[in-house]
Length: 206
Image 1 (cartoon, rainbow, N blue to C red):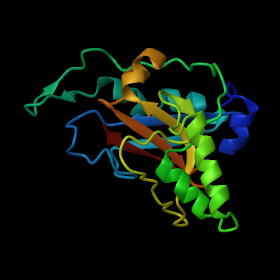
Image 2: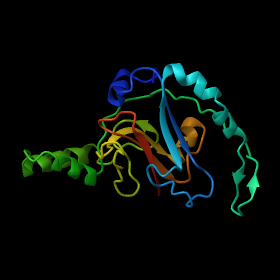
Image 3: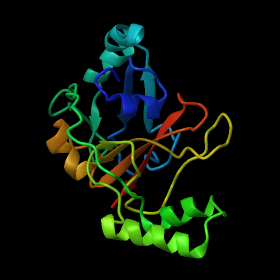
Image 4: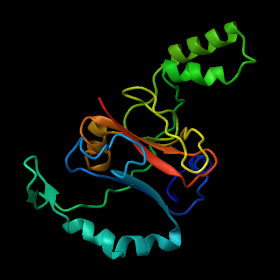
């Protein structure tokens, strides 16, 4: 978080120090419900600055480097290459982002004070600027859902976790962070609007 711009730190509400870690199971795709939030097939966690060194050296985390991979025949094989840390890419630019048409309509429904002409003007403005969200790997903005809108509910309060932490598109991630995240799909890292440390991942194949 220390490398993130102040605007991003304020949006995430996690302070200006620490680390957000995202893990996803790569074994037996389709058998561990990796597409569903809180399924156990992935993990999103926030690590405080004073816990970062411990998080790097804990035995169970280090052990991930030696875990076998299960191939299509169900046989355990060694990793073709060891797990590696991905470099943190700097933020290269800011851009005005717009949701997809369906999500924009849902957002406008939360503002009954807007008249029909105002709603149409907002849709037209978004269409002229580019109605879809950004693509690739980015922080904040709107998710680039490749299927339907799938915000999960917070397990603590039941609110819709519509905070955008990170959007990862697998085909773009290899060039951006040196790792192809998943297989031809998108990962959306969501955050509860009230419980800022409640984060999870939703995965969708395209």
